[in-house]
Length: 392
Image (cartoon, rainbow, N blue to C red; front, side, top):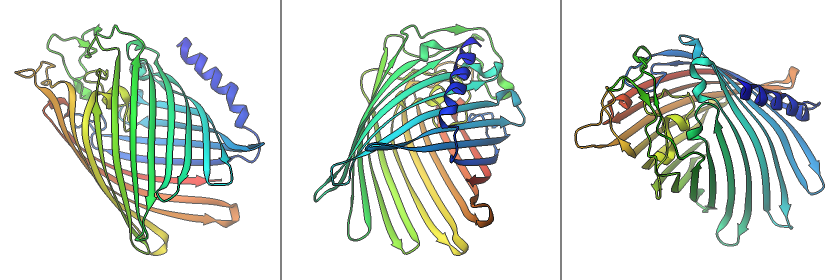
């Protein structure tokens, strides 16, 4: 609790730096009907409402320009209100041109934190990150990007999963006269865990009513390797975008994740934190994968944007598959998942001239099917979302 107060105090101290006049702001409200809010075999439904506030203030100093910003979310769960949490991020982004060409240097730093109620305070964390990116035109090729990011995440109640992460990347974008765009990227990630003492057995817990897993001995514990204080991953991908007609575009991607030297750490049987890649739920350093997908976008009459997409992930985990009692499968089989998801969205933006504001309405549907030899993670989910967004 003391840590929460310190983080909140720092937040309110920094907020006035972006709290002056002429802010750019966006407010959005969404409601999602989620048929499997915990992303596990129990298929527990819930209604999730999310409020988002995004504030930014531009600045200009000498050859540099940039913005201060704040981005905050409040997620409320109708059937399990104790799961409600908030996420806050404050940052500074800056950039400057390099010479007379189109080169660009970007620097930035941010602070973020998540706050949960007493029942889910295991998710609480604070995070600090900084980055440096370089954009350079390459004659005859396209545009080259390169960058470095360092991040420190500290879990208030789970120090064995606190970590430093370093990422370096390169990306090359180039286009053809046929209106085809290629993006090749390569990324190296290194995650170093603060603590090497990571195996901690917890008191007996029965959370089966919410889709939790009962362990064979009735206890709940952190399931990770204790002799690997770090994990490394190399990610390579290619993305292709093609303009088919004046108002129709098609894009696709192929991505490969390869691990070397150490395993990612995680909590076994933990419920999702309702972010796409919550590290405690499904840390990307904990598996290797081949991922592919495609998206079709088209502008319909009356300015309505339609997007349809499909994604397929083949994921090989570096941990054992367990049964619903928390026991290893015969032969100590490693977990393997095949995840497929199909989604569609409709979006329409209205200009409210009398108020000098933009109003965006959107409707989304996502279907997920995750096939896994770990029965806890063998599930499907359908999520329908209705949202409204106002920009000032």
